[in-house]
Length: 251
Image 1: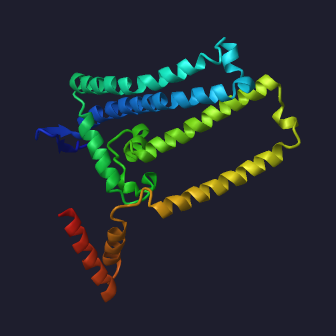
Image 2: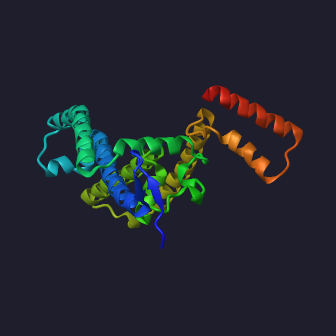
Image 3: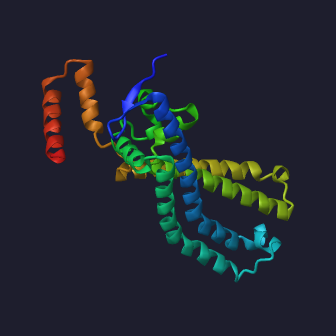
């Protein structure tokens, strides 16, 4: 099979296989780093939750940690954040020099792809935007572009895991049988209804504030009308006006 060839930043021709071999380790390494960074920022919050539910979860009691000492754990977790970021900058630079990865260029390209996306939610984009040269296990990471949507998904999943584990800890310490409680079905139903209401409220608030709006959504929709059928005069005038406004902004 013929190997596709592309050009790197220095103008040298590289094969598609070579590009994939250099890109996949980069994505895997930065995905691991992004999770570590998220855990670094999330650790103080987890410690606060453990302190608040100290008597129910009994986690600190099992480890023999005094309640007053937990303040120092939280302060230390907050204090190391800026210094860890400084150390990470040198670490990423060392990875670029050691492996020849172009991490900064890749992240800038990811940011450009996210800004120019066609769908408001990046994973809902057309399948044509997926880079098939990348291994399947890394395609979803590459499609999310390490954007704010990617970090929001990670945060939601981490929250769910932490709350589930702490809840199991509380039930185990209290010797509570979830399935023997007659109020379980009612509580679960109320929680599901509340989650559905909260989801609808957050989506409505996001639409109102224009969160993650598509920059060229209106232009793309109008250009699609031009490609599919003959537009009427008013639509054509709107398209021309939109193109002129976009030209003035980009200019």
